[in-house]
Image (cartoon, rainbow, N blue to C red):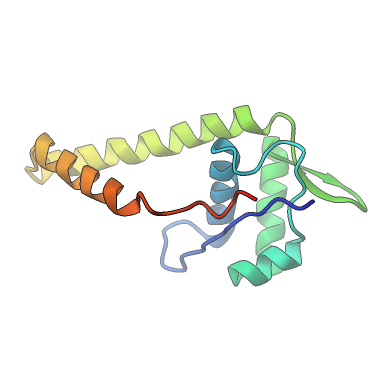
Length: 137
């Protein structure tokens, strides 16, 4: 059975689409929305669903294979590698810590008090509380 994976590519984002896709796969593995051993949908199906070129998906898959997140089985498809969870947890932590560091630095340089930043984070968290991950089956 193919793993269900929700991908949203933002054409205005700083990251290129292939890296956005790779990051979303890493995060889905880290969140255990997709698990080691699960087969991913075909490159074409993901490209159609995400409104991106199949070559973009192929690039993301090659990058994730080099990292040990995915493994290709000729004639059978692309699967989440056994070692993927550990790799993806480390990658998620690195990405999110860097973003938090940048947010705190920007907030401090803008004169925002810690309590005010915490209020903003709490409000954002509350708004997203109803968000359901589409990566799970």
